[in-house]
Length: 320
Image (cartoon, rainbow, N blue to C red; front, side, top):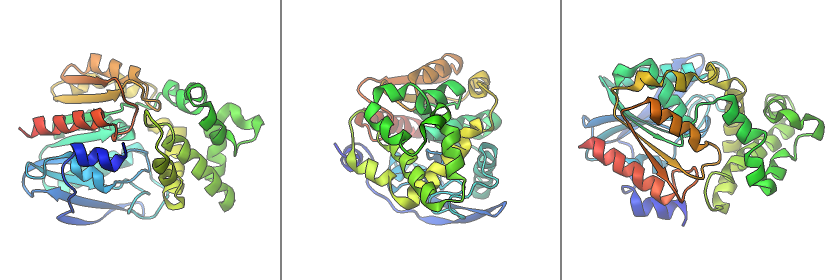
């Protein structure tokens, strides 16, 4: 089942923004934002994945437009934000500050925060920094950027599940450098050889595109290989992961008790390759106001039917 088919079956109909713009957040960055739904309804913010993925029109469809006033934005350096693929002043804490700028700009006292994959990391960082600003929290594919999680995906673990696709991922890197794959990619993604940079960006991006769903999706792999998308996605993601998100090791789980008092839902696929289920399991044990839903026949992507269904159920419930 294609992503379009899944969204048409489970999500709300396509919708266009009722307002949009660019916000100058300093440091040379302008972030694209848009609002959909009903002005003055329940406030919510959607945090996309990657980092470096940008927002897609389908993300607007996760909420009842009659019940919600939703803000979506492209994080620094990706999507429609400017400058494209820029790594300057682009950290987790810069993005947390951007979320708070948007909340203040739109005059919301509190809002529902929705984040999947890297968006879950950012949502946790924001909610632990500003718990008083979060009415509810919905997370999908929880990721906390620990060394174990990063090694599992970029060094040894998922490589054993997808040996055929791993071969494509390691192909641009000489054998002598494969003991530190993230570092080897970082040298090339931040280097001066533009041909090599694009080749590595596409390989990095397509590794993710080929491993995030339970069943393969050729159209997704092709989309992740698009030059414009891949260069921002790979450069920004690698930049964040090389720096462990500017987080202390284990910080987001260590500080999860700060979320208590915030109602939440965690939706996680049993066979999520990029984001091992163990992390969501441990988070739910500390964050006692959260419900954990383990989706048995699912991988990582939001376009898995039962994952999408569970997420829509959560936004509908919190609207009530």
